[in-house]
Structure formats: C-alpha cells, structure tokens
Amino acid sequence: MNVATILSLKGRDVATAKAGATLMDIAKDLATHKVGAMVVVDDVGGVAGIISERDIVRAVSETGAEVLSGDAGDHMTKNVVTCGMDDTVADLMERMTDGRFRHLPVVDSGKLVGIVSIGDVVKQRIAEAEQEAEAMRSYIATG
Ligand code: AMP
Image 1 (cartoon, rainbow, N blue to C red):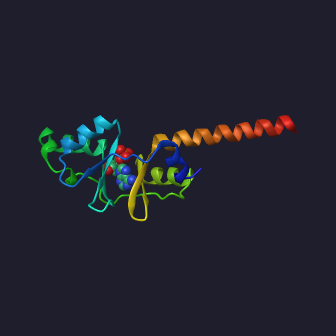
Image 2: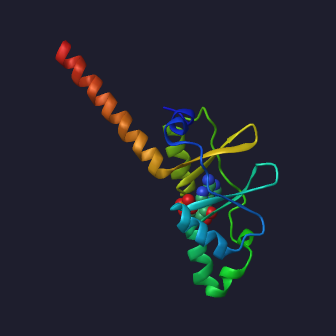
Image 3: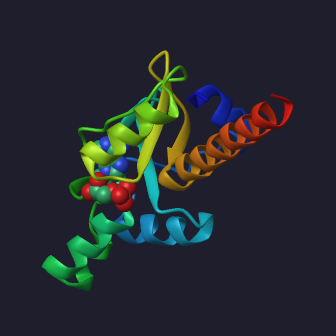
C-alpha cells in the first residue's frame, strides 16, 4: 500500500491557508473542516508551511489570547516534511514517528496534491494486517 492508493481511497482534498491569515482564521477553518492541521500554500501551489492545533495551543499559552489576531505565519512550521505518491505506509509511519507529528502533506512535481494523517496511516495498516491474516487463514485452510 502506497500514498497513491491511500489518496485514491480517501480523496485529495486538503484544507489550506494562504499567507496573511490570522491565527483565529486558522482556528476557525480547523474547526469548520474538522481537521488538525492546515497546509499554508504559496502562490504557485507549493507548500510554504504547516500549522496544527498544537501550534495554536502553544502560541495562546505563551502569549495569551491576543495572539489569535496575529499572523499565522509567525507560528507555522516552515520546514515541512512531505511525502510522495510512491512512499509506503511503513515510510509514512517512520517519518511521523521520527518527526513526532501527525500530518504529512503529499507533494507531486512540487505541488500539494493531498495530505495523509496518522488516522489514515493507522486505518491502512489495520486493513493490511487484516488482509495478511485472511491470506494466512486461507493458506492454512487449503493446505
Ligand atoms: P501535529 O502532530 O501534526 O499536530 O503537529 C505537531 C507539530 O509538528 C506542530 O508544530 C506542527 O506545525 C508540526 N508539523 C506537523 N506536520 C508536520 C510536517 N509534515 N512537517 C514538519 N512539521 C510538522
């Protein structure tokens, strides 16, 4: 199972934000889209940053609620780790575990084309484990 297959099952929708959004704009959009992170995109569809609910919680706890009217770009992670269509579920798990984050934007030819969350990865890993168990059961049953 690779990223291309995951996207074919879950779709390519990504909640994105543009430079200039406030932290409050991002908080509202996270709630509206029921997601945990927004990808900030540049004018040509590339990834400029990522901002997750954790960044908002950190900013509010450090500065107070007034930070919500400030520029989200000041609180996003600019050095974004991404994945590509050919990466496997194991690659994604390793990258998320190493980076201690739960979202991986998918980039193809320099453009944002999807996002994979830790929930998507767990779902696919469980599906793979069930398929493996079923194959083993059928192998044993048929000798
Ligand atoms: P998350 O676990 O996705 O809520 O993110 C935890 C922290 O990692 C936040 O500071 C995010 O901005 C950052 N983060 C999330 N996804 C990525 C990513 N793919 N690359 C780099 N940083 C990320």
